[in-house]
Length: 183
Picture 1 (tube, rainbow, N blue to C red):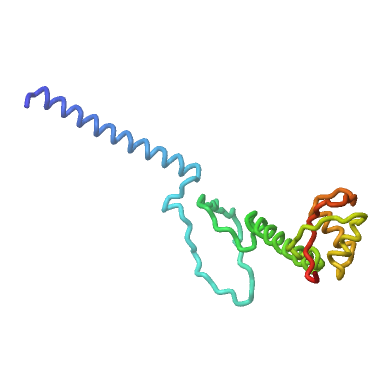
Picture 2: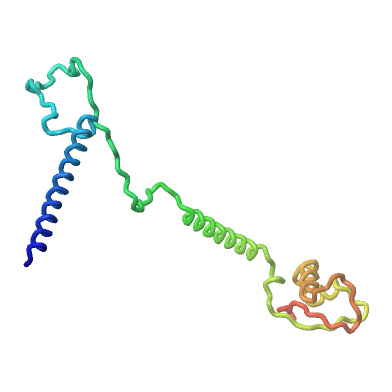
């Protein structure tokens, strides 16, 4: 290698050593400043007990006799991870599920109540077609096709099956009526 290259390497090495010394000096200054502020406690600055520890036999409270008491700052870290919900917290899903279940139970109870209150006229799904005779009213037709059931209920069912808005009938008119088991 040439002398110029060797000289260049020696200069670079010397600069690296100077840079390391400057960094170490800067760190020492920063540590000294932190120690003066009280931010960092060195090992020599720790205080140790000078008297032996005695057990409390009479329940007395031992307090320092004099001087300032230095408390270390306490920092409590909090995790940023998702936390598991407590057992006593109710979420919106639980409320929604309760509402849906309650609505289902109420619908079921209403359905059972309607089944229990309906009579035989409404339950019969079978129907038949009859012709209205001369001078026959809706009540007379109901009494003729279902004599064992109340006339008012049979009239209601006939009007419902035929989508009638009034009870006017014409001779020869065809009507859908609930089928009678006694016929």
